[in-house]
Image: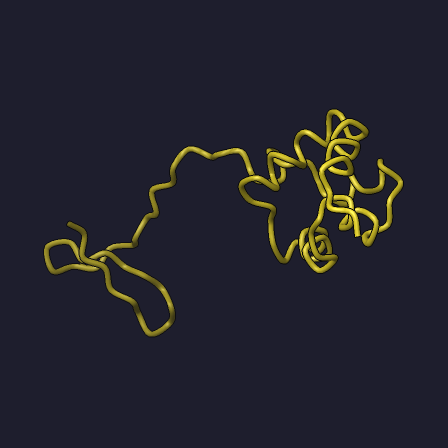
Amino acid sequence: MKRLRLKADGRIVEVVDGEEAPFVVETAPALPSEAAVTPHVRELRLRAKLTQAEFATKLCVPIETIRNWEQGKRSPRGPARALLAVIAHAPDMVFAALAANSPRA
């Protein structure tokens, strides 16, 4: 088990045999970023020629959700990521299916 110490200047050092040594972070292999996995929401919306409000209505989510995704404040997760991935390949089919299943007001 490594012993680490936080120095006053913000550095983290490793304590080895009572002596301080620079702490080296072992990095894991890079995973694909969420941006690479999930198509960019704004790009999908613009390809569909929809406003944020129209896109939110079609996806049955609040407009704030679309804004947060586009501004990078939040990332789509779970079912939303899957839905956006399908929209990237067949937007018309997805929007038709969602419209058919939406409750009529």
